[in-house]
Length: 256
Image 1 (cartoon, rainbow, N blue to C red):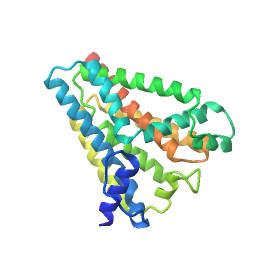
Image 2: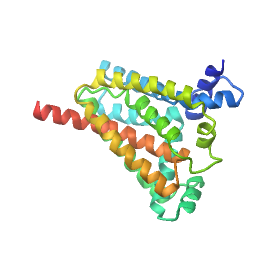
Image 3: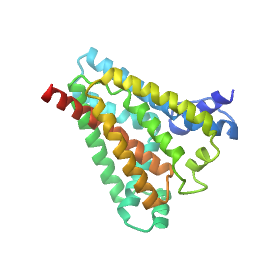
Image 4: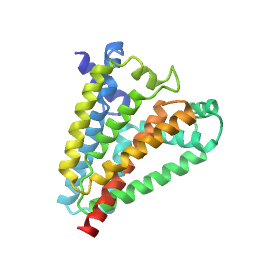
């Protein structure tokens, strides 16, 4: 029962998908972050269904890319994109660590958040358009990025002791959560290889340096991870996987 509560808690926290009302208790909370990739699987499934529909009914790449770029925001309620925008504002402020953490908590969007949000959607749209035009499948981008985000959240120090991320990670049953995340990550990597091999390997190859950069940046600029910086990393990882998938396809066609 606690596993079902943990799944419901994960979906109610990280998505707008209606869930049965469950009691917020420590048992469910200790496991819930392990099921963040399941939310990504639902996002990926929705994008895949839209992709099948578009190919079956000859819908153009422009409309596909517009809806596919919006679907993750619609399904999640923008919780990760909110973190991306808040972190963008904080990084652009060039303030000290304490002030950056205050900016993350500010509900108002600054100029840099708006600018980078627009640029992000533009790049996401362009990449998705190109990949659809080339017949590539992007379904595993969304669960895989959440696997990486959850692993990073668990293995980094918390910048705040009272934030939402700290509530999910400090009390986490690390053995159980680590085991579940390992299974999800292995399944997503296997699916990614199966669907995108060999050109998809470029996307996987780009993720480690992006992760190293993020971990160093978060520790230096914020003193560790927060829910917002984790959302920032998740969104950057999604773009990295999309860009790597496209780059791998270009290189494969050019040299093979």
